Image (cartoon, rainbow, N blue to C red; front, side):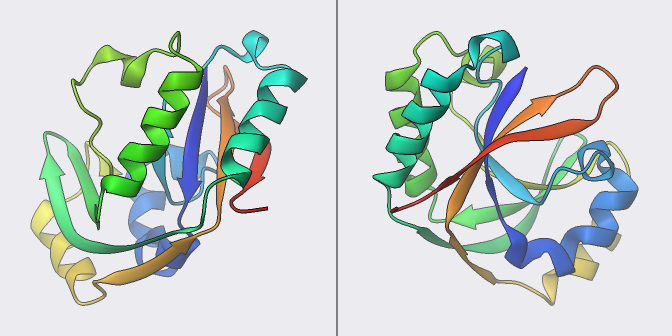
Length: 166
């Protein structure tokens, strides 16, 4: 399956060690990010027309400025919460209008939880929160989206980069 994400390199130095320990996607090469729409489409559905339409849509968007403000937990997920969330909602809604067949976050949630994953199912929440809190907020100016494909061996490849406002 493919996923559309917004990379957040400003967070790498703060979360990298935690992600490498407790998030399989970091070990698979996925950068720190906030998911915009995932799953998106099956790889076989992503041809040059889809890539060019995504390129055009994201080029019409301005870079997104936000802050990662707090360390949160939901079930086994530890994450950094972005503020404001409205830019993410608007991007997701734009994508959903163009591709209504894309399964909205696997239909697991009524509304997406925008977040930057730090740990999945492991690590001590209090220790992670203490380790990260002194580095918050993290100011971010996101300038692109990525289309990722999860491969059968749990590796991930970047299919395309989509700069904002170009």
